[in-house]
Length: 637
Ligand code: ADP
Ligand code: ADP
Image (cartoon, rainbow, N blue to C red):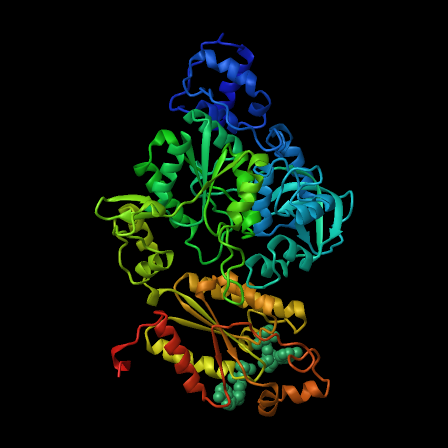
């Protein structure tokens, strides 16, 4: 209704021309500019005219006095079809073959459609892809640091010059693509050049192993953006964010990218940043795909709202949510973040140490240097039109009750600071964060959704050859954990294959499907505070790492049951090895199919020198030490 009323109002204004009609502003429309631009594409096409028409009406909301930095490449891409073509194209799309988009591709499509990736207007074709991968540039020369592709498996529907309907997981048609290019891509090459590593602990490198082998590209007509039911008032497209920023009236806009809750130091830092450039803050948290294990976006956004409403000057902050699927490409990702924020109207970006970092690699070392991201954005800053404001370390001076830059504190001064790890410890121990560190409203929201560690979920993932002793040990451990008051679900490979994965065989694809299914269920259990014990051969490293990321790396304990093949074969409880040796079972792990040993698993145990009971107690001790299990009184002796 509101939209229709707005449309009517706009039509009136357009028809009437400058200031001629006595159209009164509908009640409650503080922000006519924003409403008008919701009426895309009509309003977009007539933007100058609309402004000229409604300005004389005296609507104070249509100030738009200060020009923001132009979008990258000059104008914002908008792939949404005009409203009047919607019904026809929707009917047509319903008859086309479908392509099911992953969650990542849905995020990418949304940001392509609204121009957040301007000047890119499609999933990358081969030339763009190659040059982006190798040189961080689109074929036409503009910077673009991250490949943005639509990988698919070969399928009869994917043919050149044909149209396909792009659907989300709910089956809704989001867009129609005219397939103009189909090309192969090389995983190793992309991983090395873009992420600088082939290490499967990198969440994107692990995920890429599950992507289709072909990339498709072509002209996109977007019917609708993915629907979001949460925080709708904060989900601003680039044009909407620009209108709101223009209304704030500051030419300089400092963007702050985050996927974490904000503490007082962040607040101080962002306030100092906008002061230093006399500008406004675009608080722009990522709510698309971050890292599993991050604080969920519902909780985070509640904290951002509380902060923005109570602790910032409302004339100098815009809180908007960014449905970005992060790549954790470190330095390259930081350049991407700068480019995206420019499209939203920002000309400054705060870049800290380890920006967009994927965590630690298989050797426990960081993937990128702490300042690599800052440096790379600085190198391209002028071309991007986005200046880097380094995220300086701030410390609290308890005596003076204020934050100052760490480097300017005299050596003898008493300072206070809390590391990210310590924050987690506070929450894990169920203690509230001190007021000097976190605003009380934020601390309360975090405490509400963050139970103490011994009530949080965890996934215990047993891997090893058939007959290694996974099930036997897992069964003992299950009982011990139940005895310690934890909720446990045991997902045993052999059992899962009788229901959840019934019908799946042992080809690589089927095994991956089996493991991902177990991983999916485990992730749900963990999210709800339970312990998931999984015991499947899970022979492939990439798939195990994928599951680690699905669950969240700090909630995943990989347990390698390190029993040598000869011992498993000798035990041969199910007679499988004998059959495999006779060739009656094909692709048998360890005999005719590889088993990829885990690199740095959290726990490794030996079933030759230790009994199942000893090993189960060994794992229990580990969980107690990590605070995941509280040792009951009876076991304190
Ligand atoms: P998996 O689940 O790894 O395929 P199972 O637990 O089903 O393996 O089978 C392991 C077999 O090895 C069982 O028959 C078990 O009795 C025997 N076994 C012998 N010693 C041990 C040990 N220390 N730990 C676990 N299993 C052992
Ligand atoms: P996966 O990780 O391979 O899906 P599961 O634990 O679900 O492993 O299934 C492995 C069990 O299935 C083995 O313990 C073995 O009893 C049986 N099995 C049957 N065929 C094979 C095979 N080709 N390779 C490995 N295990 C097999």
